[in-house]
Length: 176
Image (cartoon, one colour):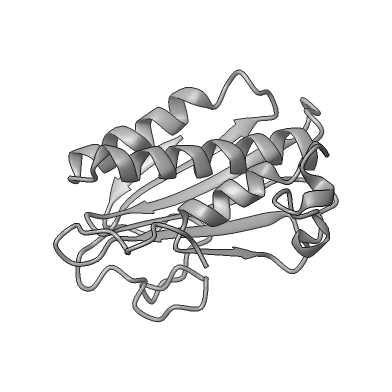
């Protein structure tokens, strides 16, 4: 696990972009605080890593309600990578890259699995799927993040939560 302020981690673009298509990285002149880690494919090992991210966001002034949503989305994305992507194979790792600022949280979570098609995950809100297990984590991620994108191979998810200037939240708090 590594942390740094204002520098570029391995795998990030050198032009200040996040590699997600935005040109300014969304940090509007504020250098992001970067945290990255390689996590074992075990559901018991990532909690301290997540806590470190949440503590830094709290230091940056993020409110408890917003931190709850970030926490849920981060936990779901990492646990999905471990359980569904890597199938808890101890030989496989989950890579996590985060960029944090007072107004933006961006994370990329990648596993070593075969990938999946997000649109093929059943909508857990549909009447016919209410009692079907699965899909709830992805629904939570989409609800709490401002944007959610998946890599073409289906092995990585990139999520972003943007705060409006002044720390106020979007009116519905929902994603896409």
